[in-house]
Amino acid sequence: MAAGYAATRYVANDYYFYAAYIVLQYVVIATAWNILGGYAGYVNFGSAGFYAVGAYTAAILYQLFRPPLVAMIVGGGIAAGIIGLAAGYLTLRVKGVYFAIATLALAVVLETIVNNWDYVGGTRGIYVLHPHQVAGFANYARLLFFAMLVLAVASVVLARSIERSRLGRGLAAIRDDEQAAESAGVPTLRLKLFAATLSGALMGLAGAPFPYYVSHLEPGSAFSLAIAVNAIAMPMIGGATSWVGPVIGAVLLGGAQQIATVTISSILNLLIVGLLLIGFVIFAPEGIVGLIRRLWR
Amino acid sequence: MTEPLLCVENLTKRFGGFVALTDVSLAIAEGERLGVIGPNGAGKSTLVNCISGLLRPEAGRVYFAGGDITALPAYRRARLGIARSFQIPRPFRSMTLEQNLAIPRDYAAREPTDADALLAQLGLGPKRGALPGTLTQIELRKLELARALAARPRLVIADEVMAGLSHAEIDEMLTVLLALNKSGITILMIEHIMRAVMRFSQRVVVLDAGRKIADGAPADILADKEVERAYLGA
Figure 1 (cartoon, each protein chain N blue to C red):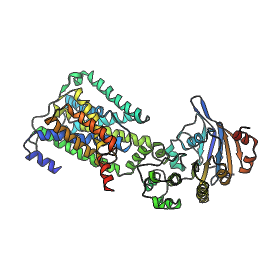
Figure 2: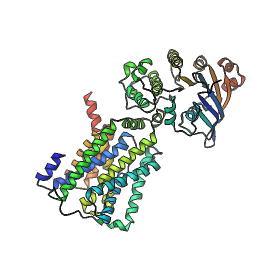
Figure 3: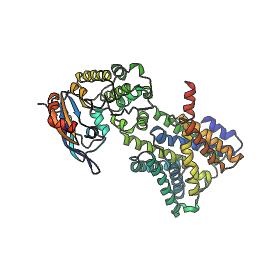
Figure 4: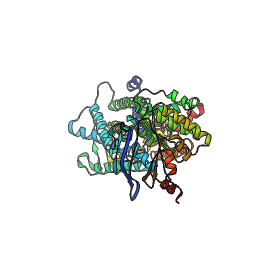
C-alpha cells in the first residue's frame, strides 16, 4: 500500500491510475463473489446488482449531504450488505441453478427500480462530481485509485482469514454436501446468510467510489454485464477454492481487458472473457491455482 | 424403567399425496442396540431423516434426552448428540479424511474429539491425509461412521452402513459397531441385511408401507406372521 501511495506521487501518467482502479475494483468484486460462490458453492449471477446498489447509495448520499468519500464507501457497503442479507434470506433455500436464476432476477429488479426512479436520474443518469482538490494527492483519480487499493487489500485479507477459519471450513462443507454438513452440526442457513451479506457488502464497497470515477452515473454502466460476467469468470479462471484465485483472475483478466480496450477494441473484451471462461471450464475446472497445484505434485 | 434416550411419538410424514410414515412410535433406551428393518419403500430412510432433522414430520413429536426436539433444525440435533451416517456415503469430497472429521469436531462435539484415534480405531489411520475419492466402498462407509462419531454423539443412526459389503466386511463392520455400543453409545441400525440386523440388535422394529408392524426381540420378529407376509408377500 505504501508503494501504491508512492506511485500516486511519482507516476506521471494519469491513465495508469484509471486502469489500475478498474483492475483493483475487480480484485474486490472477484474476492467478494468467491466468498459465496467459491467457498460455499452458491453461484451469484447478480453481482452487478450489488455493485450498483453500492454506486447508487453513494450517489444518493452525495445528493443529500455531499459527505466525504469514506462515508460514501461505508454507506454503499452497508446498503449492499443489507440487500445481500435480504436476498440470501429469500433465495438461499433454493439450490444450484435456481439460486443462480434468483440472483439474476434480483439484479433485473434493482435495475428496473433505478430506471424508474427520478431522484437518481432514472435512465438518463446522474452527475456526481468529485471535489476538485484533495490533500495528499495530486488529483482525485489518484485518491480513488488509492481508496480502491485499500479496499482490495482489505477484502483479500478478510477472505484469506475466513478461508482458514472454522467458518471457512463450514462453508467448504456446505459446498461439498449441504445435508451432510447440516447433519455434522454446521448451521448451514446461518453460514450462507453470513456469506451472502459479506459478499454483497464487499461488492457494494467496490461500487461506491464508481460515481466519482465516472462523474456521470447511469444504470447501463452500474448494472453492466461486464461486472456480472467478470465476477464469475475471474474466480473461476483463477481458482475458486482459494483466496489467491480471484486475485490472479482479476489481475490477469482485468489487466488483459484494460490492454485490449486500448489496443484492440472495448467491445471485444467480453468475447475474450467468454472464450477464456469456456476454455478453463473445459480444460482446467479448478482454475490456474488448481493447474499449478496439479503440476506441483 | 428409566426414561428412553430417544422417543418418537405418532410420527406421520407425507410427500404430496404419498404417505411415507403413518403414526409411527418407537423408543430407544440409553445404551440399547435397536434395529429397524422393512422392505424397500417401508419408510426407513424417512424415519431417519425425521429423527436427524433433515425432514419435518406433518404430525407427531420427537423427544431426545427428555427434551422435545421436533422443531429443532438438524444442526442443533447434531449438537445435542444425534449423529447419523448416510445410506449412500456423502463425504466432503474436497477435504482429506482428517478434515472431514474436523467438521463435526468443530461444529457438533461438546467434548474434545481425537480424530486420529477415531480413524485408527476404524482402520483408516494410514489414509488420514487422503481424499475420499481414493477410498474403497467399505472405507467410505467407515468414513461415514467415523464422521458421525467425531461429533461425540450419544445416539448413532447407522443408515444401511452395510449395504453392498461382502460377508467378511459385514462382520468387520459389526465388530466395530458392537465395540462402539460397549463404549456406551446407543445405536439405531437401519438395515436391509437380515443376518446382520438379527445378530446385532437387542430389539427389532419392523416397518411396512410406512407403518410399524412389529417391535420385539429378534427371535420373536423372525417368528412373526405379519413380518413374514410383509417380506414374502404370502
